[in-house]
Length: 337
Image (cartoon, rainbow, N blue to C red; front, top):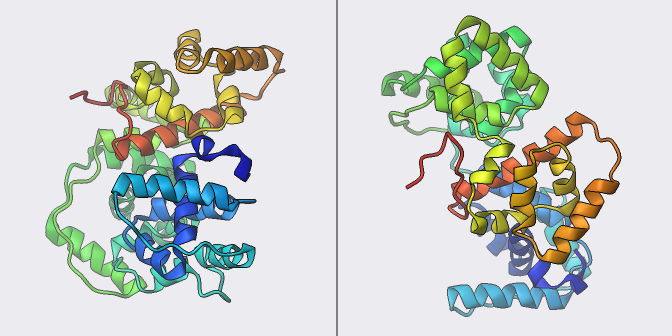
């Protein structure tokens, strides 16, 4: 992100990253302690990718922040060395004693919650030899995108079995969940209590499927359909897919467009319904829409897997924005209020 771009072209995540870097290591660490795993990961990646951030951009971002909170705060804007040092902190560099390391070392995560901070492969290793019912509860407890990544690392037959078990789950008794939490605590240390937790169900499976790549999603859904066609249809009805973006209101589409790159959007639109393209184009400036139409026409063949990846990336951002209340998703799986 070059300083010349101006704050108006900086995404919300980038603004947050710039602000955290401006706050200094200790203050940024305190802020991050109040965020969840996905937010920390997203901000960490954004901070790592920031380059050539000049004082002008920093001042604009901080100014915008001050306008919103209507408060004064002391902020020190340092040199390139300071920014590099803070980046190392944000990325968990051992020499810098990193923000992420400090969060994880002193985190209040316990038992099952610890899994949410682990990478999918580590979670897969933890659950691989557990009973399938335990595996399904753990996957239901994770966020859908993380659960999808864990499922990808398990054998095909296991994926289908676990998906159907998750769909059959409705709630887990407090004692059973506490026992599972205690088992996890023995592996990760820590202490605490667990309340009754409603997990699993058809909607949970739909959310997980939304984050699966096309081939794995098709494999699992086809296998479920062979066993229980009604269940497969219920899951399909609750999934929010790229075509459902047509049902998002114009304000939501405009907010979404500010968070995604042009390159990703062009690839995603390569193989979608004309109605979706028109929905996107009408929420752009006339000039931007014309340029994108030209780029689409000039673009050569694109692998279906690349289109799916781009669409999944956009849907991931859309779901994150929906969770934070920035937009309302209008797919068949979403209740409009």
